[in-house]
Image (cartoon, helix red, strand yellow):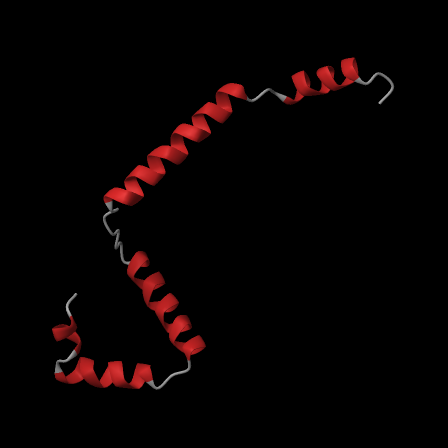
Length: 85
């Protein structure tokens, strides 16, 4: 939203009251407002950079899964390499 929205009469008053709060209280208020938006179904669009980052992370995760071995395999390999453990 634009800054003009916040300069309307009621919203300007709320903004000024919010500015008077401590930084910690403003962060708590922001957190509460954001939680309320999400609860009401707000889902912001991802930016292109965020989409690329998620794609890279998903690809790295898939590669990890391909290379990963199960617990039984790891346990048996450890016993083979270090008998007596």
